[in-house]
Image 1 (cartoon, helix red, strand yellow):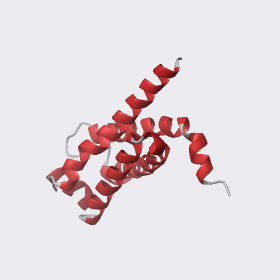
Image 2 (cartoon, helix red, strand yellow):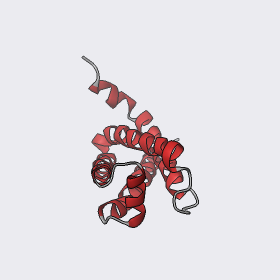
Image 3 (tube, helix red, strand yellow):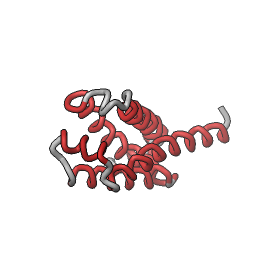
Image 4 (cartoon, helix red, strand yellow):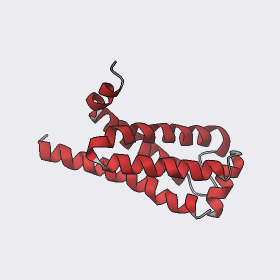
Length: 130
């Protein structure tokens, strides 16, 4: 694999992860009924909806900036672990007849961020060295 191919692959993963998270912000910040339903079921409406939206916005920006991709990926992984956990424990895979799309998008973001974190592993480990 050439360096150019690797760079294209990394950008594809960045755009997938950030694109999905940024797309869902409209629903969180506009108080769409589906979003209100989800966070009401979780007992976290409205503070959880708005807080999660802000964290996803931060993660997306960090992912899109090459120097901070690893940090954004780590934050994205944490957020998606939460989303996947709540789908499996409280919400269900299918939420309001969405055919599992929200769950699938969370998995895609989780996997994209995981690969980005792996590729940024050296930069991330420097954060934790004493």
